[in-house]
Image (cartoon, rainbow, N blue to C red; front, side, top):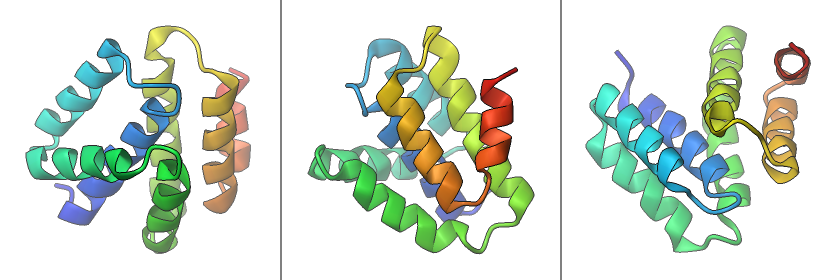
Length: 122
């Protein structure tokens, strides 16, 4: 069972990466499905509102927010999050350079960049 904070991080991570190039329908459905699976309707709306507050600064604000929380997560949990967002973003069959760069920045912040690169090169 995830805490409210963990649900927020999970959904915000997906939302901010999905919105990087504009949220498409498949991504919107995946985000809503994730919220339902996590029983996180309020956290889902919070993540959408967080991004919508200012799309141009959403990634940097989300990065600051998540870094303040994820620093306390164990390595496995950080790897799980970066893998989750990579796999979710790859559902559409490709990852844009901007999305990949954003995920690499987060992986570096969380000290799991090797694990993300290993996942990418599989």
